Image (cartoon, rainbow, N blue to C red; front, side):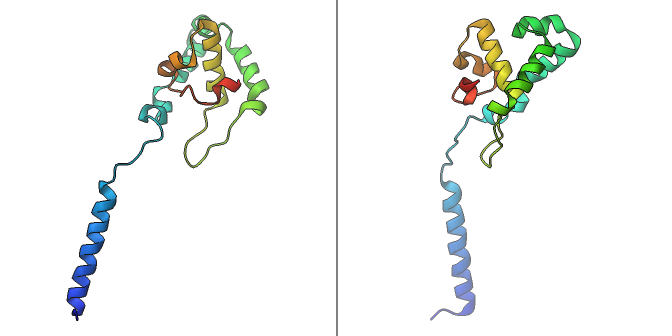
Length: 128
């Protein structure tokens, strides 16, 4: 029979082995890191600046002025607003709308727009 000290050492060794085994498993990423860090890479910061400083450039980018975009956001928010979940933050309505408007203005697909907007094409943008 093992002494208390030996039993304690075995327990520590087993716990350490289990921790090593758990850490050695390759974790599966459900989203690309730059999609997760959407706030850092999004076009929204540029749009906010353009709306205040260069309204003509804002209009050129979305093919409508800032006031009309604000009005559209207010109109569509109840229909397309999503809740944040434990897994990820919801894409803000303003961002969903600006991606959709830019796609309509340029004819680009959402797949093409993902690098500009940091929004996955599989998101709910198609419902806008």
